[in-house]
Image 1 (cartoon, rainbow, N blue to C red):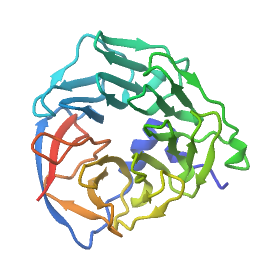
Image 2 (image 1 turned 90 degrees about the horizontal axis):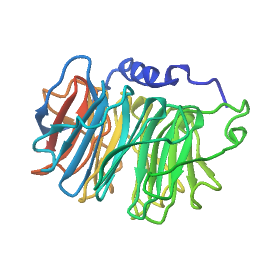
Image 3 (image 1 turned 30 degrees about the vertical axis):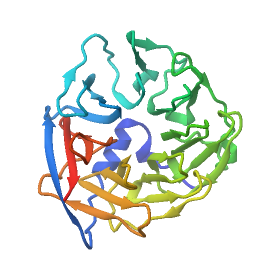
Image 4 (image 1 turned 90 degrees about the vertical axis):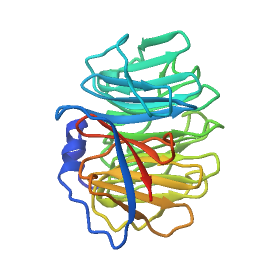
Length: 323
């Protein structure tokens, strides 16, 4: 494979790369309502929002951790656990919440409360996902893949021969992960890499490669999947991530997050950009609002009253809905 994408080496590279690209002009757009629920400072950022039932979780930097019991209408700061690390990815499944971040940090919450988990790595972890059966996957810097069979209580590092993906044996950063109810795992990262495993990480298929880094993905049990990344890249799968096709977005911004809705619409967030993609549509619809000029990270759905919850720069948590 070609030259390594130096700008994407680590969290600072990821953010710098996002800020270096301006959103492209959209040919058409839909009106949107953006309601701020929490506003922080210039040095804060909310990198992920996750939800289960009426419970919501938002996490970011510096050491920001919030929960909501009313589908995101109000938020409370979590103070009973803390870490000096940045929180970069999160997921909620039933009563269990998992958060991952810098220095291999893993936080876990269940009915007994919060706990720090030793995942056996000090690599920066960018993303985590889990299913109702207790299977979980986390991915991060330099090809780090971790799996869990007990809802995140313990973790195992997965070995992978990176010579299969590039002729120099580089270990690409992996930025996104998704796990289906049957345990099938899909991960994405640098070089537009998409890997898929159906045996809990024992073996992997390389299903897609390209040039753009991919920063987030979601594959549902229905078979529909989306992956997003650099330069307005959106890929869609209709077969559980086995094959992927490009969705034309009309933007050049880095796209950083995905949230699905029950009506088959997908919110895509990024640098000064929000897009809605319908499963049956060939392209994407930009959301147009005068208050969207910030960088938005991993969103969640649904929010109370409909729409999606989004987190971004300045520690902002907001609800966005399409008019």
